Length: 261
Ligand SMILES: [Zn+2]
Image: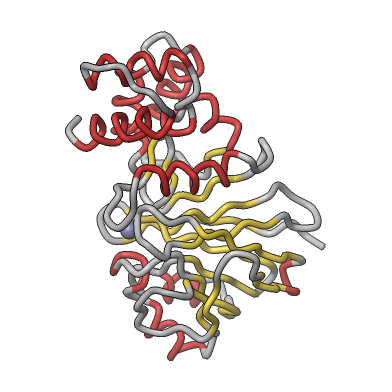
């Protein structure tokens, strides 16, 4: 079986709608609008097999109903969130079978950005594992806590941190450079971070996506996955102006810092 193609379709102001393609079949993740997806499907003669949603925000679900109506493809989404259309309600432990792709996606509950946010993780027969993390994890960043606590978000990110190094991290926004600017303020001496800044700046200068990232790279450069690192904890405490007793406190201080950066 030929390896699936993973394509980020730029949409809205800075979203990526991820499209997984195998032969003439496609799966779409978090279609915030339908026109960009419809155009791509028509141009490449693709049949939509499934529509996956991670959380209820409009820039992730806005195109789901129109795409379902045009294709008949079933919609999968979080068990507990209000969605414009959903045929399969999912929570952790559930799976999405994509036989045409040689792929089973496992569902993870990752509350924090929204209360019912889910993510999809799977390893194709021949190829690197993939993580569709919605707005929970970004390149060198993480989602804002609209409906959850720092402890919840830290636990959610911990589930991602346990996945293999070569996992392709498919984030839903191109926020990388602004996140890296902040990450460099947190860890100015991190050589991996300096290297990443150079590489990703060069990609953006050419108008190319900085994604997918890998979990190895996020573990090496994303402050929100590095709350146990002494340099990150010290920086967070300095920013908070007080000692921080736990990783949750470090995480909360980092999130607050990034909100106002
Ligand atoms: Zn969101």
